[in-house]
Length: 107
Length: 118
Image (cartoon, rainbow over all chains, first blue to last red; front, side, top):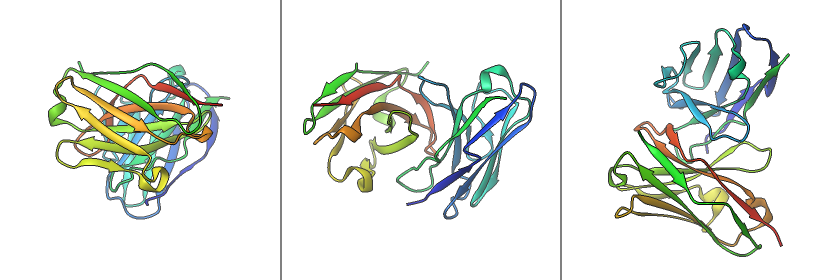
């Protein structure tokens, strides 16, 4: 199986901060890397697919980059509604594993 | 507007089975696959498997070893997830998710809580 690690596991930030979350795969997954945001008690929401493509309706302050084994999700200016948990997922090979998540909370 | 509506919460005893449904509206199920993801209390997301018209059933065998069955009824645009031989560790919220062609999950159901308790 393809394992994913995320760092940091949690971070504290303020509104307006630039935030970066990294995701590392155990083997190359090309660009088959997706990012989701999950609010407490809600279903996950797709933010970025194929490493860098912004899902329709997602604000442009979210961006993704990377290929192979190393990927990054960046929030350029954190907004109040962005405090949530973020997961990466690889869709290169079944099982389509998720990273363990990064919780972004208020500093 | 794509909408996935899942069945209601379930409480089951250890050793029993549970069947969760996910009804699709806004597109024809026949042409699309469906994935299932679960999340234990306070835990992360776990990919369970997928069901599609071409590939049929694809299961995360390492985690579910013959306990998981995914089916679809195209006449009602409904997909089903059945998990058997339940144990307490199966207590979780179960989600269906509709994938894009690259496997990313674009639309999600609202989640179904399954509690396994004696």
